[in-house]
Amino acid sequence: MPNEQPRLALMVFGTRGDHQPYVPVCRELSERGIKVQAWVLGEKNVAFMKSFGIETVPAPDIPDLEEMLKSNPDLREIMADGSVFTFLKAVGKFMTEHNYTMIMHEWFMKQAAQFRPHSVAYHPLLISTAYAIYEKYKIPVCQACLFPRAPTREWAPLYLTSTGVNLPFGWNLSLHRFILNATNKQTPETIKIRSDDGLPPLTVDDLWDLFFDPRMPTVCGWSSLVAPPPADWPASINLCGYWILSSDEQVKAFKPSGELERFLKAGSAPAYLGWGSMLPASPEKTARFAVEVAKGAGVRAVVLGGWANISSDSLPAGELQTYAKENMFFSSEALPHEWLFPQCSCCVHHGGAGTTGAVLRSGVPSIITPVMTDQFYWATRINSLKVGEGFCTQLNKINPAALSAAIKECTSNAEIKKNAKDLGEKLRKEKPGHLLAADVLEENCKDSADGTWATLVAPSKTSLSLFACCTSPAFS
Image (cartoon, rainbow, N blue to C red):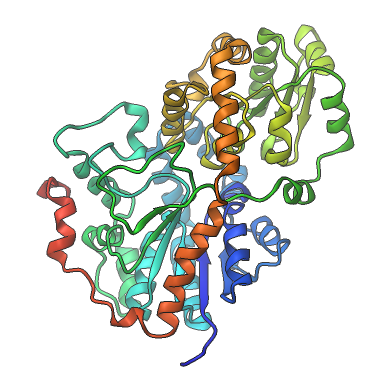
């Protein structure tokens, strides 16, 4: 329809931290005249997105990842062990047992039918549903990711980073194809879901093609100064830079307490210790771990308790509890990273993409204690950039003394501190990444709305398969 307002849908999955980078992108698109609607799971995530004025539609009776972890101790234990495949399998089982897989897919398809977007930006974990929307409604679907997802010869899938696997002669592509298939494996249930939509069974080739089809670009929310793109990625994969809420906006959204502000002013710059939803053990053991680390390093510390609400209250009376009460501040609420991190001496964290970017922008040394997936990758980047220390050991296997030593090193090593400061200054001077992401998504959406996109010729399967020239039939 001529002059129709372009409409874009955003499909997001995860915790509030996963949703936050998408907020500035959505708002920028709205300001440019694109009607944006976010399709979101979880009450807290819905409230968070709405608080920024984003039109948000909640999924019915489907918990977000944080709620799943809170309600299921088995999932928490599996996550702490760091096996991403075991974790994804357990999440899949949980979703199937509660019929969430079918409910979620049907809900997304229903929203597509009602909103009739001209394009969709989707979280990578929702790639199968995004492809179904593309097939059924013949509109572009664009992946919006926060860490490298597209296949490349240069490195193995980030699911495998903790293993150190890296194959020569382009064979990493085989691993990418294998992982793509394994994480989107079709079951009788998913085949029936697609059949009910009038769609044929999904193949790994279908999903593979999405990464390389220039009609459906990918937008990436990190800086090439931190992680340059591999040489074999096509031009349709856009490294935009970090998608950031300003410090003022974060303070308004997360409201640091007066008690925290007084703690920050009461002594030397503290270390930050925070692992989000990634806990190495029970809340009690994690609290003990955090205090042992801070005491061993001889530093004041701000500890983000996260949804598990870790605190010093669980510590037995003695040296650790005394140290915690005199030198540490525990927060059970989310904290504004852009405001807090520049006031710290260093930041110890799990290595999530958003947290890593926030630490790097702050200009203070970063210490990554990874749990799974991309967190190990960001740890390697920290080491390559010499702006902190990235552990190759999984969080629940790190000795408190080793982490204390890392804090001492990063807060005293002049080279690390200078490198961190210099990189932070460069990142803060970059054009805001959400503006570049909006450029790509705006053009794609408008081309779809005015009919231009429908006239584009899809690449042949032969041309797309060139990217898979090193794959083995065994991975098909």
